[in-house]
Length: 372
Image (cartoon, rainbow, N blue to C red; front, side, top):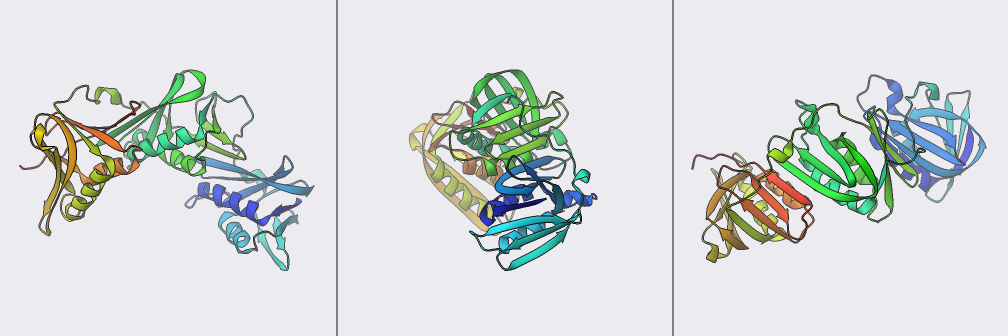
């Protein structure tokens, strides 16, 4: 293998695929990045067997070939080279990669490409396409609610349900549920898969804030899902199992509602969370009569107390309800809306958060039982 690429293009590609490199695998080759000449350029691939990332770097090929080299070292070496310079890559003796740029050079000992796992690539007709901007925003409003505890693996994933020309994303742990629906650009037969939350977190990093589509491809075996944008592929394994019927938990009515400014409520929750963090991490939300026009957020612990009032359009019965400060704060940080409606049905029923003007999103938080 012998080819030339530009330093900034190679550095960008390595930065993208390195996020898929395994850090704890017993297979040495999974700590490597696969370099392969393809389509008049260099194809970079890395995987940890849960996700795989592929990035195409334009270049000038003299001789075709492939080799895997340590991903971290390769990234650091290329990052140390001067931007705007040409980088020459050449494999000698089958397993040695020479990296030359200007008066600088280094070589790395690699592992043969045949030992690298096969990663599916785009090529077949996509299952559907989705606006990158819309999908990125939807994922930011849902993925954080997926469980991080591996005790129930299915809850570490995001249910992805295609019906007609819409896709619904749902994530849940034992304390909250986030659901977002958005349009697809092509209709799809009804199908549901569960994508690891970590895979979607990596996808968010490569999606652009543009309406250009991301192509979505489901493997016929329904064991993998592939996302393709210009020059980049991300393929993820799917999680086997039955995702809980979250719709049974979504409240269909409420006795109290408060419409508030999201930023003002977030500031108030952050203040109370500072006090709550030294105790049970509990903050209380309280409404008085509808005429008061105020939602009170408070926390108390041995170290002190905090309280803030937020202007609110109130309807219904007065209520005092407690939540885990972190869950409430994360929901407020990730929802894309200026105003939110908070809906309650008493102190022991789930609280519901809905963005004003967006009927396609709902977030449910379980309350915390307190002594008083």
